[in-house]
Amino acid sequence: MRLIMYYQPVVSMRDGVASCQGVIGFEALIRMAHPQRGILTPAVFAEALDHPRLARRIGCFVLDAVLAQGEQWHRDGLPLRMSMNISARHLLDPEFLNDLRTVLAAHPDIAPEMCEIEVTESAPMLDFPRAQETLLVCNDLGLRIALDDFGTGSASLSYLQKLPAQTIKVDQSFVRNILNDPRDFAIVAGVMTTANMLGLDVIAEGVETIGHLQLLETLECHAMQGYLFAKPMPAGEVPAWVNNFNHLDYRSNSSTTAQNSAEYNE
Ligand code: C2E
Ligand code: CA
Ligand code: CA
Image 1 (cartoon, helix red, strand yellow):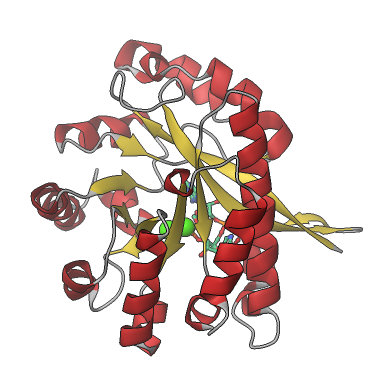
Image 2 (tube, rainbow, N blue to C red):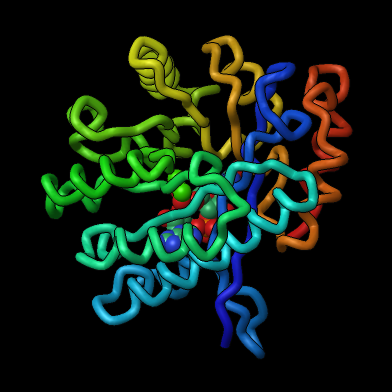
C-alpha cells in the first residue's frame, strides 16, 4: 500500500486573474494505492490522517510530495498555486514549523507565496492560541492560509476575525443547495460580503453544474472548485488539463463542452 497525491484544479471565471490560463492552482488530495482495491479516497483511512502516531508522518509526506510536484511544475513553466490540507494534529505538533521550514528549504524553486495550507476549525478548536501563533508564523514564512469547510463549524465568524487567513473555502454543503434553498443562498451571499469587506479571497467548493456556476457569479464569487471542472486527477494529467482549460467553455451556450470535461477521470 502506498500513499499518492491527486490534484484538483481551482479555477477563476474572470479574465486575467489567475496566472495559468484561468487556473489559480491545485488542491492536493491524498489517496491510497491499494494492490487489490485500487485508488482509495481518505474516507477509507480518515482516522490515520489525524492519528497520534501517523498524522505527522503523513503530513510530512504530503508537504514534501506537494512541494516537489509544485517545484517541478514551476520549472516546467506552470506557475500553479499548491494547496495542502494540514491535519489538526500536525498543525498543533511542536515540530510542525520545523517540518515546514525543512520542506521549504528542500524545494527552493517554489516560492512559499505559491503555497497555501488549508486548515479546518478543528485545530483552533483544540488549542486556539497555538493554532493562531503557528498560522501567524506560516504567514511570516510567506505561505497563504485558507480556512477550509468554512461555515460548517460553530465558530467560523470569530475565527475569521482572529486567525490570519487569505482565503475562505465555502463548504460544499452550502454551495450544493444554493439553487434550491434560499437559506444556503443567503449564507453564501453573506460570506461573500464579509470576505469582500475583509479583503479575503473566496473559493466555492463542490461546484457541480453550470447552474451553480452562474448563481455564484451573480454573487461575485469567481474562484471555484468542483466536479464541473474536474475531479481530482493524478499529477501526470495536470499539464494537459491546464492547457485545455478555457473558462469561456463554461459560458451558457457552451455547457456541453463543460459537461464533457468533467468526465475527465477518476
Ligand atoms: P476537503 O479538504 O474538503 O476536500 C474536498 C473534497 O471534496 C475532496 O474529497 C474532493 O474530491 C471532493 N470534491 C471536490 N469537488 C467536488 C464536487 O464537485 N462534488 C463532490 N461531491 N465532491 C467534491 P476527498 O479527496 O475524498 O477528500 C476528503 C477529505 O479528506 C478532504 O476534504 C480533507 O479534509 C481530507 N484530506 C484530503 N487530502 C488530505 C491530506 O493530504 N491531508 C489531510 N490531513 N487531509 C486530507
Ligand atoms: Ca481542503
Ligand atoms: Ca473543504
